[in-house]
View 1: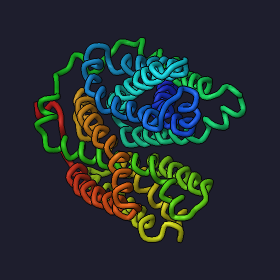
View 2 (view 1 turned 45 degrees about the vertical axis):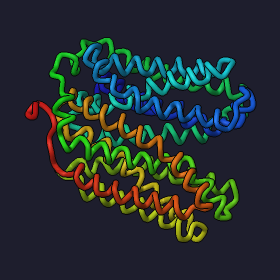
View 3 (view 1 turned 180 degrees about the vertical axis):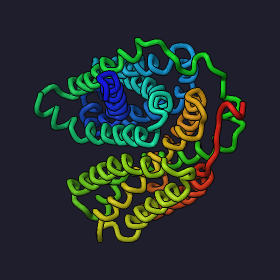
Length: 390
C-alpha cells in the first residue's frame, strides 16, 4: 500500500470514529451537566433529542454541498464543524450547550450521508470491506466515548466542560489526515446529474429507508433503556451497565465481518433476515427471562443489531450505480430513518409509563422488528439505482 493510500484509509477510519462520540459522550456526563448548567431532566434529555433531530433534518443538504464543493471537502468541513461544536458546548450557559450540540450533530448528519458515497468513490472495488471498516469504526467510536469520558474526567480533573472540549481533538486529527485528499482536484458528484428524482421514484429507496429507520429505532431504544430494563428485572446497576457495553462491543466485531460476507452476493436478503431474527431473539430473551442468561441475550442482540446497521449502510452503498446516487439515496434513507428513530426511545418510555412494566414496550419492539424484517427482504434484493434509471 502506498503512503497516499495509507493516509487516505487512516483519514477515513478516523473520520468514521468521530461520528458518534459527540452524541454518545453526553449520556455518562448528563447528571453533572444538568447540575452545573441548571437544567431539569427534560432539559437534560433535550440535549440528546436536539442532536438526533439534527441528524434527520440536515442530512438532505449533503447532496447540495457535495455538488458544490465535492465529497472530500464536504467531509473535511464536517470534521472541522464537529470540533467547533463540541468545543462550543463546553462554554458557559445553556444556550451554547444546545447550540454547540446542534452544530456538532449537523456536521455528523452531513458526514453520515457522505461516508457511503466516499466508499463508493474511493474504494469502488472494496465497497463491502470498507463499509465494514466504516461501520465498525462508528460503533467503536460510540463505545469508546461512552466508556471513557468518566475515566478521562477523573484522570484529568477537567470536569465535563474540559472533557467535551477534548472530543474536538480526534476530529481535528482526522481533518489533518483528510486535508491532502480535500486539497486534490475534486471529481465527485458536483458536476454529475441530479439523481434525486429517480431515487425518490424508486420503490427500492423506500424499502431501504424503512430498513435504515427501523433498525435505528430498535438500536436507540436499547441504547436508552437497556440498563433500566435489567435494573428493574433485579440485576445490580454495574452489571446492567456492563451488559450495554457488551452488546456494543459485539456490534463492533459483527459490523466489521458481515459486510465482507454479504457484499460478495448479489442478494443480501439472507443476511438481513438473519440479522432481524437474531435481534428478535435478543428481545425475546429480555422479555421472557431477562436474568436467566443476560450475557447470552446481549451477545445475540449485539450480533443482530450490529449486522442490521452494517447491512443497511452496505445496501445504501451497493444499490446505486455512482457516487452521486449513493449520496442521494443516503440522504433520503438516513434523514427519514433518523426521524423515525428519534421517536423510538420516547414512545418506548411512554408505553412503559402507561403499562407499568416492560412487557408491552418489548412486545411493541418485536412488532417493529417484524416490519424491519419485511423491509429488509425487499431492500436486500438485487437492484440498481443510478444512471440507467435517469
